[in-house]
Length: 286
Image (cartoon, rainbow, N blue to C red; front, side, top):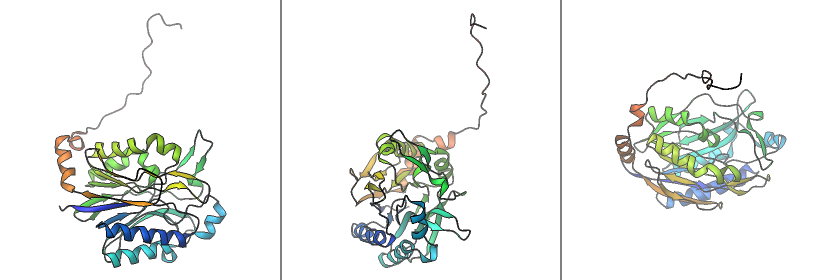
């Protein structure tokens, strides 16, 4: 397994897929100039549109999507693996998918992944999100090969469900992806610790390209794109919320080494859960 350079592209996607595709192209070209042969963009690269009706007018099918076509062209031209973290895709049944794409250096589609866990939350800041009102959740985890490594897919809120990453690690993934559009509040609280935890508990690299800053639709995202090594060390970070590129070397052998030191993937055991009531203390009131 060889060493390769990976890049995470940080964006501030607006409401225009055309402008966002142009921004993506500029940043992906910069990542390739820095030597990256695997480049990841954030969740909702194509557009962040909070208004449901406006989103319905902007989003389209995969064959007509400008981010998909631009990414395919770039992968082929630059000879890189280009991972569109996700974009909204209109499915044949009329529902939307929050879908990731991985394109090969010849522009062919290697894999896609539909976000499984929907961001349905109410935050202390007053923000309320119901992703399930607009998107149909995926049902399948995905692991595929890049540059001699095995890549596992996830998107944003999936980060809070460690069983997804454990399943992908057990299926051979030594690089885990978490393209995201984390809110500022949740990002400040949990972004770094969750990404490092997923890396540590699976002995895998974690690459997380993020959205950052104040967006046209009024939301604010955290930024701080990260690349974490299998020992949980941050090896690259965009320590801000501005658009940009971070690059780091990925050595799959480091994943194998971490798993030899702490073989928790092999040591896991099945167990039952006894959730019976606790015994009553002596003298407790009846």
